[in-house]
Image 1: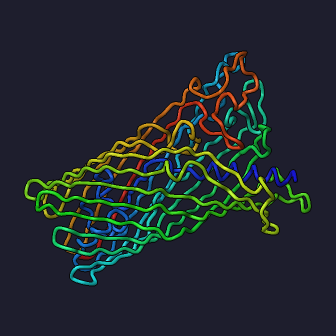
Image 2 (image 1 turned 180 degrees about the vertical axis):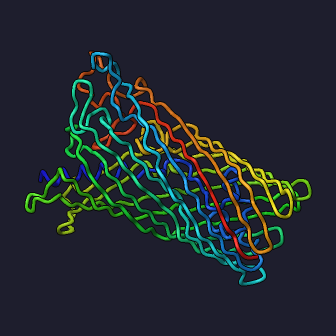
Image 3 (image 1 turned 90 degrees about the vertical axis):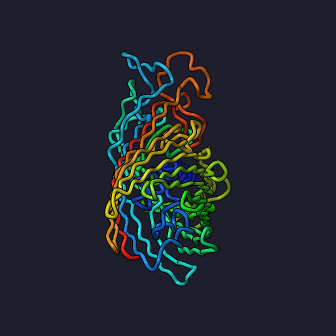
Length: 470
């Protein structure tokens, strides 16, 4: 029974901590380098095979056949409250605000492959495999999580330090097609098969109610149920194009193997092996964009509004827990746990500008402002900070008869502070001496969320893309 309770806590803590990585933010939608250089716009004008992931209706812009290879490496650095409550010169906690620390620079090798070809005067079909979000980072020498040390806390919050590591990516396999209804109206759709993989080593609370941290390793993967994406493009003469994209929600059935050297099996003495199963939902999304053409089609200005409906599907995560030895689910309440996310809808406004210098070269610039899905009530160490997020980019395109080389660079950043005074916790009264998480974090069970302190993220992009064909 004790092992079952510990196992439930381990699965809950680790799956909850990793599930939100890179997903609470507005998705980068960096599937096409031209789009990346123009502030992640493109719903109205991207007519490459990457339209499968941006607006399938625009596949109609492909004359014969095109192959697109895209590489989008990025560097990410986070800041989160992992140094415990602020303390005075005597080592006594001075309040419920926490100190924050930076992670190492993490590397995410995002990429995409698309191909599409015309099968009829009015129809194009295509295939794509692309990464929605990718991330890898670690906090080293962490000595305090959610207000408690790992594995124990001294008078000044000192503890044997640990490393928190998370690697994550998710994406889609997709089949898409477009149909030209008239010269001014194109429609398209795509069938998506989502996938995701995660790996993490974390120090987690392994026994409910006891703030004792132990290392836990997890491997998580999943393949989702089919989902859709539809698009419409309206051409208003030579002056403007209007693009509309709607993506249905998708679900990935995640399966995770979890072990911890601190939790031995009573029979074998080896680390206790458990399995966690959970559904992860990628929310509905809607993008509306208008592209304006000036200077005899040499200047393009695009403006987009995008919303991801995370509030509907990402309020909490339900996890089922099984023994790996016999595959049996744990009994009763031990077999199910809930992780609070409390996300809100993500909103973004985007602008992109392209000027065609000559038939051979184009220059591009863009930017956007967004509100991430993360709320104060659901913030975690590896999720992007709540509040506003910013993105700025620039790039260029080089054009030949049958090939195009696109290059871009971009930077994205966000910052938000959760004030200890805003927490729904009792007045601490006398100075805090034990660093209890109840005075630095919001409500949570095994995994605490909404901990006070400063949250930051900085992402640096580079993007290169080769498109071949007509």
